[in-house]
Image (cartoon, rainbow over all chains, first blue to last red; front, top):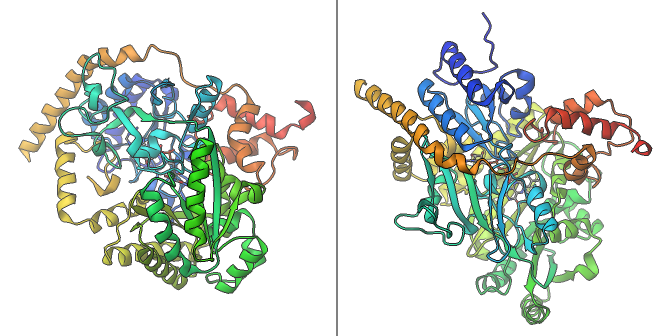
Length: 514
Length: 109
Ligand SMILES: Cc1cc2nc3c(=O)[nH]c(=O)nc-3n(C[C@H](O)[C@H](O)[C@H](O)COP(=O)(O)OP(=O)(O)OC[C@H]3O[C@@H](n4cnc5c(N)ncnc54)[C@H](O)[C@@H]3O)c2cc1C
């Protein structure tokens, strides 16, 4: 007899799964337990170059309260059914809303979306997992709170909980999001509810203002992990500065990345440039303005000659450095002088501000991201190849020019081998850079899909062989990346997993942990 | 093997007890206001679709008399680069309103 489910969790019989579903329905009601192919369709689409069947869920649960989640984990323990959590579920290029392994039940927390508190004076927020950046943005505007968000490029449709739990980044001075997280509520696999940091103490009012609490700091183990289900999340917001000055600095040669990084590093470390600067390659910016088919046809990577034509036609540098100054006008004036002097020294940089570039669509959306305004313009990337294939390759680099040049050259060389284009950028952290490369391919083309998979695999192999680690990866490659960090870390991760979730019901496979 | 089973069983029983004890604490918080709900099709269009479909990222979709059923199917399944949207993000009722908003001529609004 054919199964009534589109997939089953590994090692769980249909009979037991039936019983689990029946119990889930008792807790959530029939309409919040999804099992049909039609209902589960939006949980299946990913951008990864692997068959959708590898990541097809067996069911999705739409929980709305902590109590429901406690009951869900009890049922999961009873029947050994694994759940995969999503908050806003827009982890596009990292696995989207689909689970790491076929048959896992998606625990979709999107409907648990209340903004519990936004404190104007102390500039913090406490939210539930399903709250989107758009919701927060509207709330802050409506209540005239004068606070700014820092968000990833999918802003409006993503949210702070999922993004920060996956250690995502944004583009304001608060861009390294987990640095600004403060207090979580977590449902553990045994059903207990832990509030981290100061939240553990009854009647404390410092949960969202002091990160560390007492004893070992626990918040970190609930990020990029499967040790608990985060149900509330606190984080800091940036007070709206009196003045804001976004700018872009363009360079014409790929080797100039060395000069760019050497110039930025001291400005970033000293705080003259306070935000997460982006050094975007022409091919990362081009899709906002240009069509690939106007410059190149047939298979293979785009030749450098075509890239130079795009730059000329669309007023792009080969590198485009987006940054901003924040503060009072006086502070900005002083810092602007320092910035222009530093970048002006070699005579290679072309510095543009809103005055010259406000109408440029690439500048406009970058400026929005640097001030926490909603935009989805970066999705233009997907028009470059078409066909909806994308994986983020995200190795970490030192903020040192020679290193960034090495990483770029190696990436380009591997991309060329597989006929893909280097759409890369460096996001400048405090001392590191996230080298972010979109592996864009046409998922409707089996040859390109195969090439993309092999390309990504080789990137991971070659980078780790040189000691370059990946900060985050899609669900198809989590085990491979976990392996690159060595056996001791893997063992510690596993030990924690066994202690906190002995039945392995919470997101097995996340970050290679089972 | 036996030991593992026993551990699992103890763990299972613990879960049941803990859920009963600690739900009282968490239940207090659940009484607050209900979560977010969409007002109408126009709001969803502005706060999701328009960021691409009015920004030269995705194709123009309004005033093209696209069938409502087609719009609903694309929203739920996604289409190539366009992500899929789940019923937890845009509930079925709101999706009907959204599809109507997109497929109806602008003048009717
Ligand atoms: C064009 C484009 C640009 C992008 N730019 C950026 C960018 O600038 N910066 C960036 O960081 N990302 C970027 N992304 C990647 C991704 O879309 C964002 O990181 C997005 O914020 C993640 O989705 P989400 O916020 O909906 O999180 P979710 O998908 O809800 O969650 C992400 C992951 O966190 C874990 N998780 C979620 N909820 C819980 C929970 N309650 N408890 C425990 N674990 C949980 C799960 O493992 C889940 O897979 C980009 C994607 C695209 C398509």
